[in-house]
Image: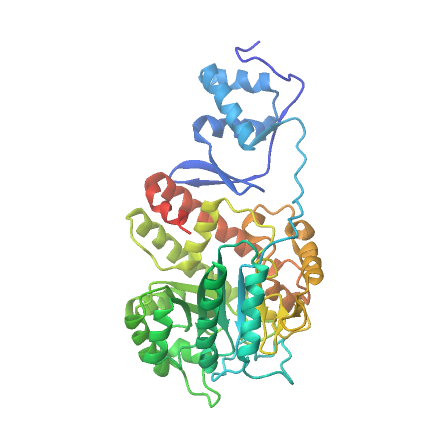
Amino acid sequence: MSAIETLAPTLRYRLREFHSFEAAGDRFVYLVPSGAFFALGVIGGDIVDRIRAVNPTREELADFLLDRGYPSSEISVSLMELEQSGVINQGDFVQEKPSVPIKKFPLQRIVLNITNQCNLACTYCYEYSADKISKTEGKPKFMPASVAEASIDMLIKESEDRPSIHVTFFGGETLLNFPMLRSSVEYAKRRCAEVGKQVEFSLTTNATLLTEQVVDFLAEHKVGMTISIDGDRELNDKMRVFADGRGSYDVIVPRIKMLLQRHKTNSIGARVTLSSGVHHVRRIYEHLTQEIGFAAVGFSPATANPNRLYSIGETKMGTILEGFEDLAWEYRDWALAGRHHGFTNVNDTLKELHSGISKAYPCGAGLGLLGVGTAGDINLCHRFVDSDTGRMGHVHKGGVNHEAREQFLDTHHIGARYDCHTCWARPVCAGGCYHEAFVHYGSTSAATLHYCDWIRGWNDLCLRIYGEISLRNPSFLDRFNEN
């Protein structure tokens, strides 16, 4: 009989659901589905290895650990911690099924597609390419103030007791409808002051229409900005062109530099769309940060049917992943030195991991976020505005259709995506982008299986980076506690 009291001698230990990884020479586990971390330590590693090998009883495991020289007090504490943390379990372990999330969720953000027009003709654009799903025929080219104001009123109402809301302006090219954007900002601030809420703003633009007057207004009202640009002149001008084929780089770069010089009140980031012709991650990042002056750069593969010429494909995707890994390790090095690094893909993932997030849905679409088209149609998000898919009401005809919204949420949470139930990365992924799924598989409820290996590999890399930072410079992670 061991010195450890046997509480349930007939029960055998089992490992629960987790993903193992190492960082800075230490062993960790990422617990699924809670999204939590646990540092095993030496004894914890021996316990996990022994349970994996033989599924011992508590008495057998205690004897094994005593033989390895661990004191009985340390064994008892370690077993208790591993059990309470959900790393191990006595008796048969039944994998938890994802719970159905709450149906009632206050709205936090609306994305106003204030125009369906654009002055560029980017080859991969999901609004104008062969993969377009929106139907804008017969609808206004520019959102009128009446629709924007009704949308803002709807957001205020549907946000319930949230103290802060967010309005995002989108297009087409957003700044083609700048007069309405300006009046909407002023209207939203006035209405929120009346009801005691805070309101924040953001927009996405191709930068072709930036002027000093526009920039000064955006800076005055602290509008966060995302600038679409794909790198240096050669790379940017492969896809981001005017209708006559002229590249946009020489037009936008002076305007972007003016923007970065004059607008200091909110974040300004670059968004790069990667495609078959534009996949040079390191080259793009260094150009946008060192030569243009962006402090933050994010990359996203073009959403495309695999038959499109601009679809990345497996070969180019491998090159992209190598570039991502290169920048991610550089981020690690800078973090250990306490320095800011502008690679937002890894920064955003680390923030989610730090929060212990376990997603029921891949994003806020249909949940805390809805999109509104120029005619007032409410949809799942900006990518589905004016499409037949994801319709959820009209701002002038009853507002949000809560029945449609709840039906969507009932059928799209992680518990309904059966392909995802055994994937260890589901707390962060939750099945992937609805638009990506629709373009590839014709259904918003499909899991984005073509990205599964990439998502698991990316999250494993970020876990290793997070673990190393947590051991070697934990104060760096404090920035992720900020709202």
